[in-house]
Image (cartoon, one colour):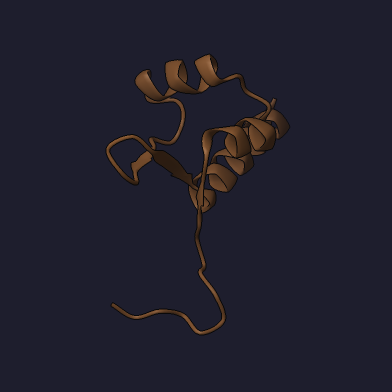
Length: 70
């Protein structure tokens, strides 16, 4: 496994960080994940999960583009 010497290009965000970043409630995140409208979580351990920061940022950019198309 190669590690980037300048730091990780992607990190995992915990649910509270995702909520603060995208403005969604916990229940809305899980509901939209189930419907395929929000990035899926990555299992960290049997009791912990996180979301790819890059995927969350891409989702936000997609939302901005959709807004600007209207």
